[in-house]
Amino acid sequence: MAELKVICRDAGFTRVQTYIASGNVVFESKASPARVKSNLERRLRDYVGKPVGVVVRTASEMQAILRANPFPKAAPKHAYAIFLDEPPPRDALKHATGAKDEELQLGVREIYVHYGSGMGRSKLKIPAAKSGTARNMNTVAKLADMVSKL
Image (cartoon, rainbow, N blue to C red):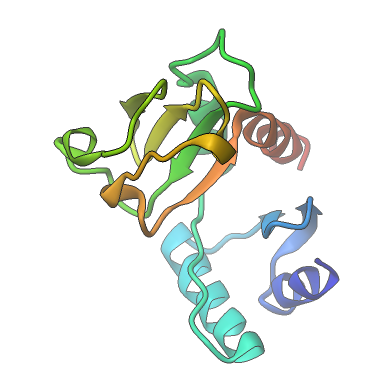
């Protein structure tokens, strides 16, 4: 994660902090989210030699995602937000397969999933989430807290 911090600082971002070793980074930038995304994707591609997808959310969006969690009574380690670049198609959940005890709900640019038996045991496939990245509500809460302190 030290390399990711350097990449972000070299991009001109300030107050850069990472959280756990899964590519979570918070920072301040005056650039638009679209510019941040393209800048990071270019720099990461140059660093690793292949395309790396980046999903960007503002501080207020992270807070809203946490508040919008449709599964507040679920264990946070079993409730996820799958972050997407665009709003999910309205029929995205109709195309999901392999559901057993999972609950799903669409968000603004997220798909929320409660994995009743845990993500690791799930056979759920959501085609609309293929290009997204999932974070459990513990991580979402931590990132929302970190950005609130920037």
